[in-house]
Amino acid sequence: MQLRYSFRVYPGTGQCMALARAFGCVRVVFNDALRVRETARAAGLPFVSSGELSKQLTAAKKTPERAWLTEVSSVVLQQSLRDLDTAYKNFFDGLKGKRPRMGAPRFKSRKDSRQSIRFTANAGWKITPGGRLRLPKVGDVRVKWSRSLPSVPSTVTIVKDAAGRYFASFVVETETEALPETGSTVGIDLGLTHFAILSDGTKIDSPRFLRRAEKKLKKAQRDLSRKAEGSSNRAKARIKVARCHARTADARRDFHHQLSTKIIRENQAVAVEDLAVKGLARTRMAKSVHDAGWSAFVTMLEYKAAKFGRVFHRIGRFEPTSQVCSVCGVKDGPKPLSVREWTCGACGAVLDRDINAAVNVAKAAGLAASACGARVRPGIVPAQREETGTHPKPQPVTTSGQAGISVLQGGEDVNGTRTVSGPGRRTRTASPTTAWTAA
Image (cartoon, one colour):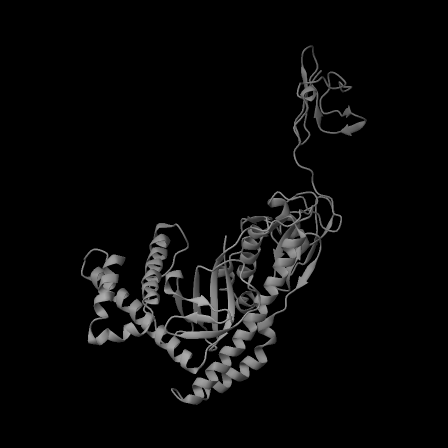
């Protein structure tokens, strides 16, 4: 499987200028190619192919208006055309229903919060013996290595984020690492008060990173709003706001990584519910929903389960996990969010709303899980061969010639029985489950 390894890089002043030049050239090539295709579409002409765009790029380098494109590596310019093809493919696949719908490709701006360039293996980049990253027409960039790469990377992407930080993202091929098997399985119910509730009764509190950083973020945004448009002070204030958001995002990502790794290592199978995050983000809980980051956490669980040989289940979002009793399986109907604990009307079990939902998530995925020793309803067992036939039942004692009298069945008095006398007649009981016995 392919994985990404991201490391912080610290380019020098001259290297930052070279990277800024590369970012600008990639942006111009992308916008020129997009403009060519949009012009052809407006004129009713056929879709311009990638090969034709590549020929036009080569010809543009020889013109005085685009001669400065030769100052950067030609590989990053070709990769910009590949990115445009990917954007169009995703757009068309969304229209065909092959993936969630996406907007049409848009023009890039130099003010975009994220800028990147990508070097493939034929670009001539390499990692020097001294641990620096040598990029063509950029130089040897210092890298903060936090771990060793498992194999030789195929591509490297240099990313500049909104906070002005630079990262090198390597794509490597890795083999799956099968962890020792464990007999435990777990269902996970995601929430806001508690970030995750496990089917074994464990509740993990939500760190609420954005809520805790709101005080500093509010001050930084207030300072930004008071700076004049286009001034240097406004640019510095914008960087401060971006760094506040970056620290929050980094803390949230680290929390997701640690928790997902712990769950995958301790359980053989994991089941989660497919949540409609986009729908929840349109409610009054939008800020808390985005602060939780459920989608990123579930994505980490999924790829780590594939990497370490675990089983991952994603059940449907319409599964009534909060309406079904995890003890007897009776559906008790929807309940408002204010109800955190309820009593089953069928079996009388007192259930915690979140733990009950986590157990039902595990059951819906076919995992045997119970909460705090709660009884799990057994599955359907096929009848044995000697039990599949029809067997005579004990005959009830009835009184002939009368209607509306009681019939004794198994020592219990069942009222409302109507008896019809006579040879070969049958007796019908008016109980909820209609039974016919020979009289």
